[in-house]
Image 1 (cartoon, rainbow, N blue to C red):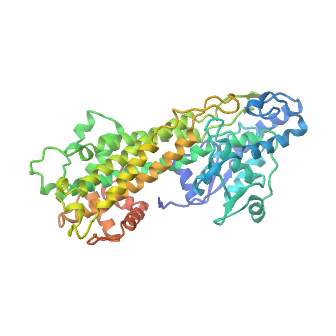
Image 2 (image 1 turned 90 degrees about the horizontal axis):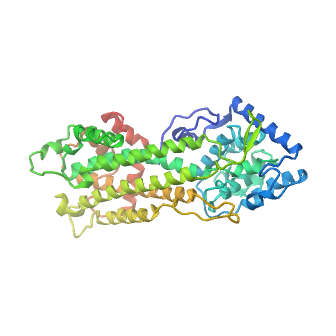
Length: 516
């Protein structure tokens, strides 16, 4: 998605202030980050306690003991640093395709923010080291598979941590190089991890949080685009706006439904196309048109719920044990468990899959001449030209793929670490496949815009509504009416570039007011 944002000089990390929006925009704009002085004091307070406990040889999980099933194995003081290094090396067991650079950057940002809360018992030096890596543009190379999403995203975060100690590989300037070389180029010394620091780095939900953050950000944008594409489809199919009446929505007052219906009314206001057939005798439209507020609105409500849960997580301490400096306690617990995110990852994927489903049904109606009243497959010279016949196949394929990807991951669990870790969330799997669902929905909605604009062409010189007309003319300034068959994939790519530039939405909102 192409976004235009105002660049900030610096973003201050406090452990409390991340949102979906400011996180994504910080990465998009390559905004430099720094640590707040309040966070630095909190980090130092908890660190002093850890160092005190080590000298007293107190039994603390992961600091003076082994990990997982080895929780009962005592570790001597002389081996504490080796324990932390070994943890990172052994847990770097990922496989599969590498996580996209953007998601890795978010992971790094989120890990810094979690440590900045001051409950992890690490040194301020570790947090500053991570900030240097983030600001330098070094991107750890992280395989996407290997996390079960419960002792945190152990394997992905271990791969992220390799770069800290100068091991493994990373990206710099677009190329893959050894982490040791990247650190040398950026004049950053590898950091030796001390007591608790390796464990603090890998106990967390930052991989699934990162995928979900980008997914929620894109989903919010897509939910507005779906209202716009739906309004164009409704006009091309000569439907009615009656079903979007405020009276109907107010007697079933779901917030998303009310917002979507209002968007549609704003988009379709003063439509000449609507006026041209108001006495046509059609009683009501098909569900994919008439029920847009109910379906699109339910998706909006789901996105909002998922965003609320995620933003709580972004500003949480998620490792184990946690250090409470104010009471002098270390408490072993389970804040690393990914269940809250696993559930919303599945919920978001299901909701966005539905947004794609209903969009594809409108595409199917647009290309079906017997339903649309438009030229079959939206081409004047059918037979010689196939028109937009096959782009509907593509949308149908993506919708079917999304149905498979929307099978929930969170209902599964498999025990690990000799049954010590006997319930796992699978949140990382849910987040990754939800990310794919949203990428598929982007393409489906692009295809709807392509077909709807082509349908509107056949109704000219009648104009669309205030907002939908702006969307149509914006598209037509950049991509012309399709008179003869051409490479369809290039059309899909071109219209995607148009509608996923934030200027497109802004231009529509200049006519309609802010869409929700």
